[in-house]
Image 1 (cartoon, one colour):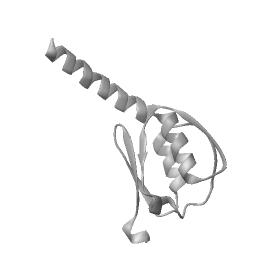
Image 2 (cartoon, rainbow, N blue to C red):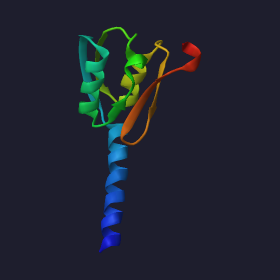
Image 3 (spheres, helix red, strand yellow):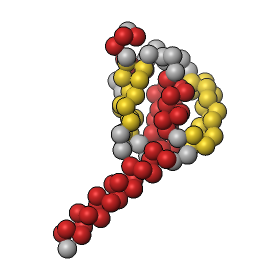
Image 4 (cartoon, one colour):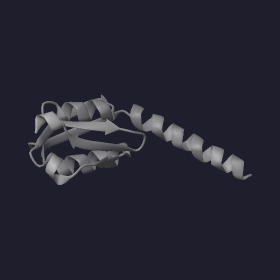
Length: 102
């Protein structure tokens, strides 16, 4: 019985991972501060977005209207040219400043 429970938990985790990366989102942000934007994106996608304040403090207010995009596409668009990169795993995104962009 325990083996079945563990297998089910692993299967649910794999499906959740695939779901979060393929989930198509709609984002409508009009001059939104970056902490608010990332909090809403995290809520909508179900993926934790982790960053330190000093990483995103220089980001301008975010204005973006996009439909049917996955999380990776949205993050790439928002962070383009900012010197901030991200790593996406099953249940979290980590934002970090590119060392060569500092």
